[in-house]
Structures are given as structure tokens and as C-alpha cells.
Image (tube, rainbow, N blue to C red; front, side):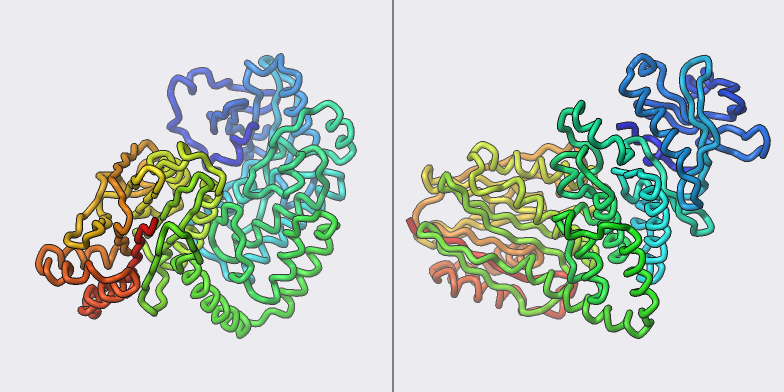
Length: 527
């Protein structure tokens, strides 16, 4: 899909590629061209001057290579038709469209501002301001729906906020007229059209059988993101928004379109009512509620899940303190009688890490299903996938990580971690402890990073000692300075071993950063 306008800055780039500038036309239709604004895969955008008002505008032309593609030209002309139907202060304005010597063009309003996505990433809104912005978007949707238009790709990138705070909805490249729905369904093959994080379940299933409620679902996601001040990537935690707002968002985001708001007017009415009754004191009360929810969310991320196996004995011990670490710890069991442990710690601590780590947790659950093949759960493959996800989403923090794949059938474990991490292997006789590591980069630093994995033998009654990064650093120092202090603990069973390790590594608690968490996990192979 041609999404170039929504992805570009709204200020002209007068230093664009010189080779492109040479071919820049001087006139398109009645509009004098000033410079190339941007170039997309299917179109060019030019900064132009309106002949009457002398104000800047954007002229969009279809790339010459698509002129003979009927499907593309039809969509280009339909975009102009849909914008032309809309005369609303919160919708980008159409000035004209037609044919010029090299094809088709659309002349549109030039909006000076930034996308709502950029705004969310740069700063947070108060709840009142966030909902005032949502109301402006809702008014635009109301106007579109009244004219039978379904936007189909409503997202923060397609909403611009001007210098004076006004909202403009843009990019109607895949918008659909309700009257066309049955006709399109007959001739189109099923395909994904839109942006997955903002798409309703029915749009993901079949993009040509949607209705106005699908736009309302997308608006619900955007509302959630504005209120929490964070891009969600489709992961919703209702506990992080004010209690009185939750029923509204839950209804807007109901998976069943029949239970959703059927008319955007009803959504506008309830948001307006919420704002009317919203008090500054209530915002403080909501903050207390959110802090409690954050504590609960943080605990759920690093609290080890309930797990039982005849082949493994797993014990954990963490400090009984709350901090916004965003640490994620999880255990996976696979049908091929394999087990995996994943530990990730963001390099930064704070509220944002909780949201991001929750999304990381969701992705791990997705790529490591119980029926996954053994070849697909190898550390090298799993970590490469996660790194790609974190790297392309530039707002994500970087993560220290550890991934251990245990395979009793072959008496082996396979592992991969960043170079600052170490875990420990204690043989069945319990006479020594071996530090294990791999020379990898942290997750999310570079999309093109390559990751290595290593394997060792893993016998019955061998133990694996895994710690959070802060405990790890203290344990490595103790192994260097007081090895006997650690070695005398190696005969302890897992439950006693982890308590002793945690105790001796946190004795100098005053020297430990409060933004980090101390924790120990011990896994003993039983059979």
C-alpha cells in the first residue's frame, strides 16, 4: 500500500537528492511546483503553490510505472474522490485532481506539524488533553461515516497535529465506501490490508467485510495509547487507564463487532460525558490506582510462572521489593520434551520499560508455542527474531538477555546470552562451579547483529544457577575474591542454595542501585 504521506515529515526537504531535483516538473495542472516533498514506492509528493491563494499545498502524482495498472490508478482516483467528499476541519482538504502530461495528480492541503505517533514518542499528554485530541479525531470519523466512508487505516501515523494543536486525519489510500463493500468482496481475494496493531479482529480475518465499527476499534487503540503515553503495538492493559474510562475503551475494543459502539456518535457522547465529570483530584486518585497496577504488572513479569516437570526441579528467590525494572523471566515447555528459560533485563528502568517488556513477553509467547519444532526454538533463531523486532521498533530500549534450551533426551543444553551476562553450571558431584557465557550483543542494538549459541553436556543431578544481572555481577566478584565462600554452598539442594546465594550477594545492599532487582533461579535435572 502507498503510505508515503503518512510516513513523511510535514516540513519540506529542500536538500533532497539532486538527481531527483533535476527532473522536478515546474507545473502540474494549475499548480506551480516548488520542490520535491517526498518520494514513495507508488507516488511522488511535490510542494507547490496555489495559483489563487499563493499558499503552499501538496501535489501527489502517481509514479509513471503504475499508469497502466488499472487497480492502482483506480485506487488513486478513489482516494481523490473520498477526500473530495470530505469538507471538515479535521480532515485533510482536497484542492483539485486531474490529468497532466505524465499521468494523474491530486492536490491536497499542506499541513505543517508532526504525526501523532511522533508526538506520543516525544511527550505525554494529560488525560484531559489526550481525550480532547481523540474527540477531534472522532469528529473527523463521524463526518466520514456520515458520507459512507470507512477509513480502514486509522493509526497515529495517519493523524497529524498542527502547530496550534489542531488535528488532521490523512491518508485515504485504502479507504472504502460502504456502498462498494459487496462488490469488492466478490472480486477481491482475501489479503491483509491495513496496519495489524490497529486492525479489528474482523479486519484481520477479511478486510473487505468490515464496517464503521472497525474504525471505532482502531480509534480505541489510539485512545489507549494517548492516555498511557506509549505506543502499544497491539498489547492492551486496561488496568493502566482510569477506572471510569475502562468501560468505554472495553466497549470500543470488544472483539465482537456487534458488541462494539455501532455509531461513532455514541463513542463521542461517552467520552464527552467522561470529560465533563472529570476532576483534577480524580487524576491524582487515578495515579494512585495506576501505581498499584504498575506494581502488579512488574511482579507478573519477573514472578516465575507455575511450572512442574518430573525431569526438572526449579526453585526461585527474589528480593521482596518493588521497582520498575521491567525484568522478564519465563519458562517454556515443548511437546518434543524440551524446556527453555528466557530472562531479559532492559538497560533502562522506569514505567516505559514495563509496557515494552509486556510486549516482549507477548512476542515470546507467540514465537515459542508448545508444539514448536526443535529446530525453530534453537537460541540463535529465537534471539535473532526478537532482536529484529526490537531493532525495527526504535522506541524500544535495549535488553540484556539469557536464553537456555534444555534437552534431556540428548543430555545437552544450548544457550545464548549477551556478553555482560553469565550463568553457572554445577556438576552432579557439586565440587565446582563453571561460568558460561557467549560473546553476543545486547538485544535491540543493531538489526543486523548476528548471534551465536553454545552447548554443553547436562547430566542427571546437574544444576544450573541463573541470576538477574545485578546478582550476577556480585556473584562473579565473589567467585574471584572468595571462591570458597561459594563452593561450600554447592552441595545444598536448590531451595537452600538460592536463598544462600541471594543472601550473600545482597549483604552490601546499600551499594546496590534501587532501580535493579536481585534474584536467583536454580534448575536441577532429576531424570
